[in-house]
Image 1 (cartoon, one colour):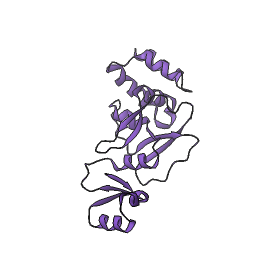
Image 2: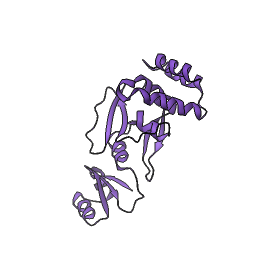
Image 3: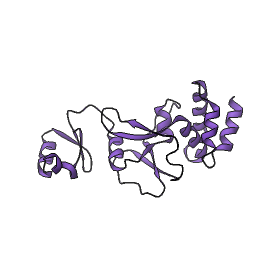
Image 4: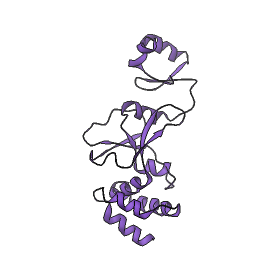
Length: 185
């Protein structure tokens, strides 16, 4: 097992003291409070591992997902992760910005994403959902972000009809997105 929670150590045959000693000896590395990873494991994003361990329902969204799909040139300084509005963001040590999305539309456009170098999975929104969210939340993430992502998505062969269908299901996304599509197509 590459990633280990301290509370699960006894089930793996390790006492907390043994886990602590093995961490001091370099066999494990502490990546967050109560979360350890084998030192021999492949390199991986510790912030995403922490997020997936603390909130398995978390979804990469907004600028993090747009950058993952190479639809924007920005390099986010923190991972943008969405959770249902009815839940509370966990305390994390990593560079994570938690966003709360409506539970009714939370799973719309959600896919699984395998965290590189691990056996862990976290959610990620599709490019269409990310673009619609960028227009919907343009006041918070910047007015240019959605436009730049839309332009890159269209240049890559994106289908405007598919994007429009998804945008109609999200509040406050349809009008600004349709205006931008009219201007760019």
